[in-house]
Image (cartoon, rainbow, N blue to C red; front, side):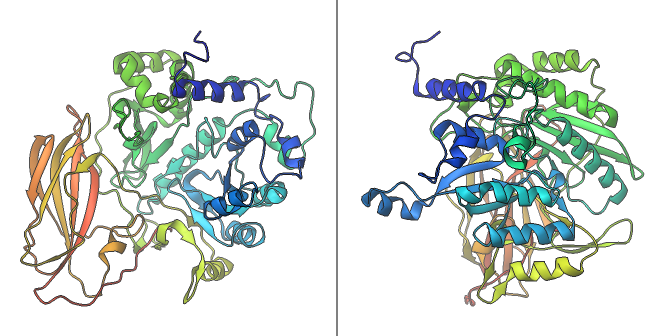
Length: 525
């Protein structure tokens, strides 16, 4: 074993994190004592790490950090709480309860995350327990919303295949429940559950005493829409549907977008295809993958502690064989499927059951009442009369390519614009597609390039690039003035399907430039 003097900074931090988990008495730590300490607005350092497993992060107001330092005061600590909400589905009653919590305990806003959860910000320590109790009173919890465990399971918000979608969502909810930690720490600390014999020594059959090396993410996609980006998750379940019936799932594993700048040992990675499983084998498949990562994941360097590095370090053939050994069955060959889009379809759509679905744009995911735009109030009034559901959607921009030169946000019709860049490690550029939309309404290119804002129009032309690692492509403004969105598609060698890696929107003006443009869009059904 390395001595502290011989350990690198990364390995020392990893060892410290592992030590905190092991000594936490199944995620209890000394949280009760830290919460009772009125001298400080913070938790003890180790307890702040344990708190993540309960769905909360300790933070501080960065704008006040220097001012308070000069006054010799501790930082202005507060807390963020994140919900566990498989598929991001809430009833109108739950929406109203969460809205009330935002006004009573948080900073007056609701934040929608890219993993279909709610976040509350600005909660102070003495109100942390009351806030968590209020969330649980709405029949929503925050267990394992953060920390080195399986996080919130995301599910396609696809209204077109209504019956099949319900079956997919049910599979995701059952898997989310199954992968919860078995410790009763959350219920004892926040909900005043009485401790019983063996408290702090519960068996964790899936996670063990030190849980996972890092966070773990699972997504359920429903083709032809890949709005949850199945290939960017540790596990992706891709629904195979025939004649409205869910037959099972193609399973992919080992995806992830994260990388540390300047560290070539970290990189984004597309998930690999394992094969097809029936719906009744979803839980066994996921448990086999999670426990393999528990036992073989890197616990000495948190930068390389995700499943994608475990697969690359040991080889995909070894990984697949290990999953099949643990699950007790072999994967069937992957079934045919296809994705044709990854974004939200904003506005009204009709499902197969005849019901209408409206997707709204939530700018940057933050629901607030602003001057002239009381969005939180408006959604509260909708919830008071709504008889359906609210579904949080997921849309984000991938980072599988690097641009040599950034594309302009605004161009003239006679400008020459060249899209140049390269694919990240392990990918090749397969194609570039150009989406065009005329502008009957003014639109801002800044808004069009924001996350959760712009849905790609149907008018599209594809240009095949034949698998090069780099690209240099003149963007054709052949349709006249309007909004052109450049989408770069990448794939891994040997893969059948390519995925959209990055999209950039350019507003093209006629020779005489017009007024600045504005856009409306969506981010929640």
